[in-house]
Image 1: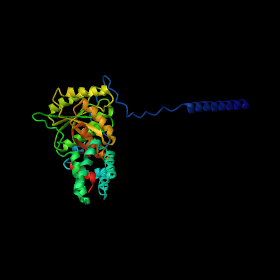
Image 2: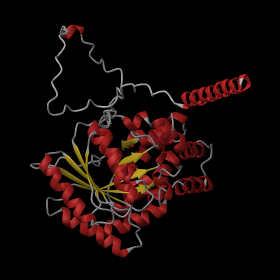
Image 3: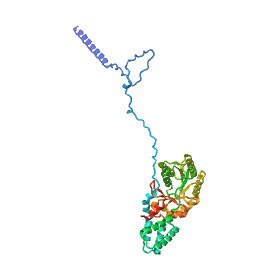
Image 4: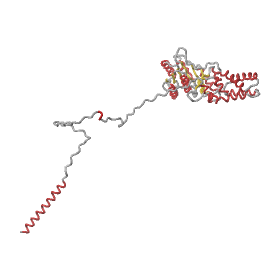
Length: 400
């Protein structure tokens, strides 16, 4: 009996222990409730629902304007304001009076061979026929031309024979007088830009390709501005894309307005508009740069005549300047003749005179056309275009 009771007690204890283990395991497997989620400070506040009571506003002291930190502009992206391009600075060209005298050294550097050669030959003790032939050759090589050379030699021979004994100073004075006769001192070399009773003066610049015609037109604008004139430029060289840009750049440097047309447009139309705008603006001078015509192209030469006729519907041309490259020598005379047949040349501009020893082209081209050299180019600088002065030119030829 006791044995049975003991077995029952043990069974009860075992069952109780097993029940405790099951309950404990169930308690351990049960997860705790999740903690309350933190409020999302980035999310917008939820809208109130119907029946919700509004929150009582909190009473806070208001800050004054002085207490509020206003942005000082240093933070955050800065706004870049693009400034308009600066207008080109207007240059004031140097005065043209005496400009050739200031450039005399540059001129004499290239022309000295002619003057010194002549003085050396004339200084010989015996001036025989062979010496006079050498003097002729020296003048012909310098492109003085056959007829002017013969006149100079004949005059020198007669005066030297009368003079007899010759000092260096006497020879120099003698040669100077004879060269001045050939170059000419009694002709009007001013560029006509002030017609009586009307404005503006109209100047057309012509010449073949490569003579520096567009550059000369720009430099001439500087000459006129330096002398107190107002200028409009007409870019009638529409066949060369860079010509109008180049001319406009020259104009901007001295404050001159440039009239231009479409590339490959009608040159006569551009020239007409340039004169029209010049009259409306009341300027003193209109300079028209024409295309660089090859003198062998008959059609292009005819077109040059058309430009002249169209411009003259406004007013007569006051100047037609032919630009010649002094280094081309006698070939420049061929060009001069052809241009003279198409338009009435009134003056000559000799460029690159500082780059050749053939200064005699001044005499030859004047004889060929019967018109004076009015301007000479003596370098690449903006103010290296000078009014031609016979005395300064001859003095540069023969030196001091």
